[in-house]
Length: 483
Image (cartoon, rainbow, N blue to C red):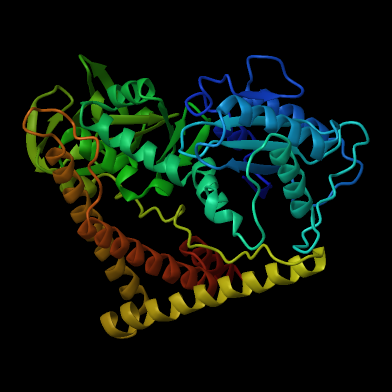
C-alpha cells in the first residue's frame, strides 16, 4: 500500500530540497537523485535550475507555486528502500511525462519507508505551468493516487482500500514542513546553542564551537542570525525565543546577569593586552572605562559591551590613575540606556490560504488583514486600560514609562533564570546534559514577558498614530514657531 499526499511550495524551495535529500535520511545520499543533475546532488543548484524554468514560464502570477512536494509512503515491512525508490521514479515519470524537473529521495529513517518528490511547477519543454485540479472528486491528487495504486499492483504490493484516510498512514505534511520550514530545525538549533554556551567562555569561542557543531552565528545589529549549515536554514534570534538574543547569550557565557552599553569605535582611546579603554561620555574626555575585549560584540563601527551587574566598574583618568568605582547600572548616567527592542516582536497573522479563484483568495486575504487590525486594536485598548488608566491615572506618557520599567525588570529576572538554568545544565561529572528543556515555569515567564512587550508595542503604536513620534512633535513645534 502506498499513500500519496501533496503540498504546494511557494517559498523556501532550496530548504525543502535540502531537507528531502538529507544524507542521514537517504542512506548517505544513495537514495536521492534528480532527472536533470548529475552526482553529487546539490540542493542549491537544483533549486536554481528549477527557478530558471519558473522565471521563463509562459504566464506569470503573483505568489506563484514554485514546486509541488509529493510524498509517497509505503506500508511498514512491505518493501525495501531500493524497491521504493524504483517505484517512486516510475511514479514521478508517469505523472510528469518526463517534461518537468524533479528531485526524488527515499527516506529510511522511519518505520515506514517513504519517497519525497519535489516537482518543478513549470514544464521545461513548453514553459507552461502544471495544471493541478484541487477537486477531491476527480482532482489531480486522486489521479496521482490511482497511478501509484496501479504501480503497487504491478509489483504485488497491497493497495489502499476505499474509505481509508491516507494521512493516518503517512507522516503528515504539517509535520514534514515543521522540519523543512523550521519548527524541528529550530529545536535542534536551540539545543546546539545551549550545549555550546555551556562550554564556551567568550563570544568568539561560542561562534567557533557553534560552527563546529553545525550552526553559524552572525551579528546583525542588535540581533544574531543563526544558520543551520546542513540545510542553509536561517533564523533570527527573536524567532528562537528571548533566551537566544545577544544579552542572554552573553549572560550564559559569563554566568551572570549582564547590562549592555553601546558606543562608536571613535570613542575607543586605546587597546592593549585584550582590553579596550573607552572615553566616558560627559566627562570631556577626562575619564575612561576599561572593558575586557571578550565582552564586546562589534558590528561595523558600533560596539556593544556586555558587563556583569555583579562587578564594580573602575573609572580612571587620562593618565590611567584611579578615580572612582561605580556599579554597572550607574554607567547609564554616561551611556544611553539601550532602547527596548520590539522590532522583531510579531504576532501571528491571519492569512487563510483558501479559495479556488484569485478573487476568492484576495477576498479571504483582506478578511485576514481585517482580523489582524481588530486584534491589534483590541490589544491597544486592553493595554491602555491596564497601564494608562489603572496604573497611571489616565496619564499616557506615565503609563508607557511604567510599562517600560516593568519590561526591563522582567527581562532582568528572565535573564537571571536563564543564567541559573545554564549553570544547572551540567551533571555531577561536569558533562553537559543534552536533554535539558524549558520547564513550565520558564515557558510561563517567557509568555508573560512577551505579553508585556506586546502591550508596550501596542501603546507605542498608539503614540505614533495619535501623537506622532518625539522628533515629529519637535519638528512641528519648530514649524509653528517660525510662522
